[in-house]
Length: 98
Image (tube, rainbow, N blue to C red):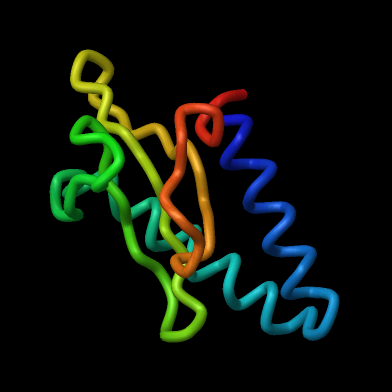
């Protein structure tokens, strides 16, 4: 989704500013983790903000990121809506918009 793509770029650029190699490693790991949602999308817990959404936690403390996603049953797909640092406060509907 557009918001998640912007989040991904911003995080990648932020990490890459100090370490391009680390940014690439982070990106490839996150990509693999989100692709794995195709197989078992319900493995992650629902979010405290919205019971219709789930969140995948990716990374190691203190650099854990929340990947907010929803399962689209009809299309048998997963839509990644938002990626944010785990230490940030909860999200609002505006955080998930386009």
